Image (cartoon, rainbow over all chains, first blue to last red; front, side, top):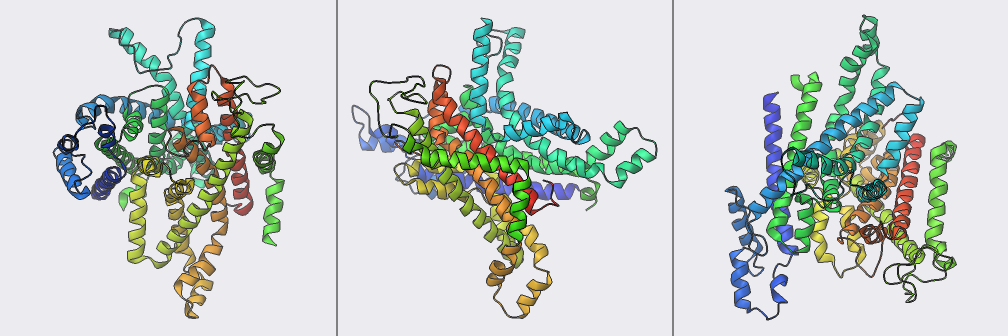
Length: 325
Length: 279
C-alpha cells in the first residue's frame, strides 16, 4: 500500500516538473517583457534594456533553452526569479499563496462535504420534493459559470447592504486593514463569505449529482439489506455501509474537480478583489511577466498533484481492495 | 431504425423536450433576431449612450452607443459557432486518441495516456491564457483550435477503457482474421460502437465550450474587440452591473439559458441512447 502511494507520488512529481517546465517554455516564447521598456518616453537605449532584461533573465535575445536552464536551476534552490520590473517573485508569492490556499481549502472542504451530504440525502429521499429541489437546483447551478455567479452574488449583496443602510456582508477585498485583534478576525471571516459561496456552489452541485447516482446504486444492494437485517439501525447502515461504499467514485473525481476549482478561484479572486495567485496569473499575463506566470503554473500543478494524492489516499482509506493490491 | 427509437425516447423525455424547444428558440433568436431589430451591431447611436431599455433600443445601449440587442445577438452567434466547432473537434480527437490507445495497447497506449495525464496536471484555462497573447490580431479560429486541443482528455480515457473491452468482441476478431488493417478496424468497428457515448459527450462538450469561451473572453484572453462574444459582453457588463444592469443581464441570462438547454438535451440523450447508465 505504502509502496503504491509512493510510486504514484513519484510519477506525479515527475509530471509536475515536466508540466511546470512546459509552462515556462510556453510563457517564455509567447510573452514579450521587452515591450514594457521599449515604448518609454524618453526612449531607453537598447543596450540598457538588454542589460536590465539580462539581469532579470527575461531577455528574448538569449535562447529559450538557456533562459530555461537559468530559471530551473533557480527554482531547484527555491528562487523563482524576478518579476518584469525587478521585484522578487518569491516575496510576491509569499504574500499571495496564503490568500489562495485559504480560499481553496475552505472552498474544497465546503464543496465536498456539502455536495456529498446533499447528494446522499437526496438519494435517500428519492422522488420526494427535497430530492427534486436538490436535483433541479444543482442542474441550474451547473449551467451558471463562476463569473456570472460571482457577479450576481456581488450585486445581491450590494443591494442588500444598501437596503439595510450598513455593510452586513463585505463584497470586496480580503480584510479591513484598519481593524485589529478579534475585530480583524471576524472581519476576515465576513470577507470570506461571498468568495466561499461563489467558489463552492459549483462543486456542491457537481458532487451532489455524482453522489446521488452512486448512492442510489448502493442502496439497492444486498449488503445494505444484510446490514439492516442483522439488526443495525437504518441510520447506521446508511452511514457506515452505504455511504462509505458510495463515496469512492466521488473521491476519485476529487482530483479532477480540483482543477476546475483552481480556475474558479481565479475568477472569484479577481471579482472580489482578492490578491491571490489566480488574480496574479491574470495580471502577470497582461504584464508579460514570464517568471510570475511560471511560478503560478508551478503552484497550480503542485496543487493538482496534492489533490490527486489526497484523492488516492481517500480511495485507499475507503476501498479495502485498493489497499490489498 | 434505431435512430427513430432514440428520437422517440428523446422527445418523450420532458426535460429534453424543453431543452430542444429552448435551443431552437435561442438559435432562431441569434440568427433571425438581427433582421427584426432596427440597428446593426456595428451601428453607433450618438444620441443614446448607456440608455436604459426603451421602445427604440429594446435592450438598451452600451457606453459607446451600440444597440445592446444587436450586439448581444451577434455575440450569441459567435458563442454558438465556437461551441459547436470545439465540441466536434474535441470529441473527434478524444475518440481517435482513446481508441488508438485502447486498441493498440502497449507502448502507444502508455505514451498517449501519459500525455493525457500531463495535460490534466495543468488546468487548460491556464495554458490557453498563457498562449493567448500570441493570438492577438489572429483569427478567432485559432482560439477554437486551442479550446478544442485542451478539452478532450477525460473523454479519451473513457473511450480507451471501452475500447479495451470492445477489441475482444467476435466481430472485431473476425475483422482481424479477414486481414483488415487495424486503423480501418478502429474507424469501421470500434468507433461506431461507441457512438452513443460520443454523441452524448459531444453534446455536453458544446455547453462546456460555450462556458470555456466566455470564461477566457471574460479576462480578454479570448475573442478580441471589435468582435464580440457573450464572454466579452458579460465582462463589459459586470464592471458596472449595479448601475447599468441591462449590460449584464441580457448576455449573462442568454448564456445561462443556452448552457442549460444544451445540458438538458445532453442528459435526455444519455437517457435515450444509454438507458442502463446512471451518471
